[in-house]
Length: 337
Image 1: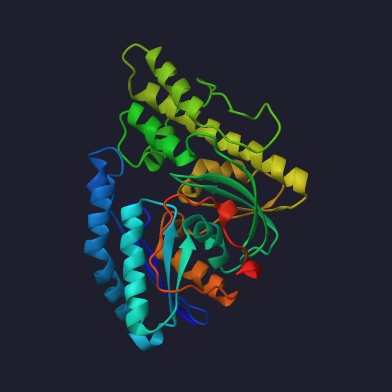
Image 2: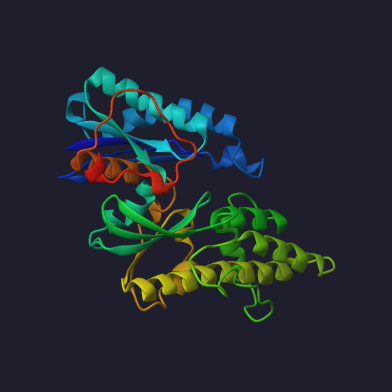
């Protein structure tokens, strides 16, 4: 089975083709970072317009690179949500139109299920069950994954997602968008001993996250320094990054100890953070990550998630339906399809 995957939920246009025999035969990503950088964040209207401009050319390029013609494509998977509604509509309309023209099925995929399954594209993927930590610009989720499609939500952020907090703190420090890579680069020169930021919600039971308070703590720390210089900003960047990584580590350790599951996967854009990976490596668990190219939004994870959905019997008509807000708790298990 050969699946065309289309990802347009935010500011990356991702197109990929997955084959259950040959693997990922094409994987292309066009990033809009340069377009949105001057605004300090994603502008939804600009994102939608750029998806319109890039989606079809990237599909043509992927078909060429994989030596595929329309008759070789068995189905199309696209991101149906969550995400920016205009951006989602571009991918959904493209997928449904091509599926009707080529007379093949199409399947809408949950964006975070795509991230969750990205580590399974590795040469040695983890077996179910496992604990999954999904950390991105829009979500921070801790899940217990029993088998494909059966995910139990353990905890999530009650306010900002981890990636969103990185972006906002980066702006406070005068760093460019996106904030995650910029903070990681600056933190390399930081003094680990100078500042100690709090670990939010780790002093209470459960698995919920909160990162909004770390933004306030960062702002107050900056305000206490008269004319902060580059070293001050580096020290603050290290303290903030370490607080996020350690908070996540504590919650993951708690989930591992309470469930008895010693396999952990880390996925989403923030999973590319080196310091976070180092923190999680200290856990008494088998930790799995996606390839760095699959941490941020991409079509490969959508193509693979679509393949898994179709393989487990998922079917849908050609109606164009997107869900900008789509809790993973509302994701339909395969046996209920």
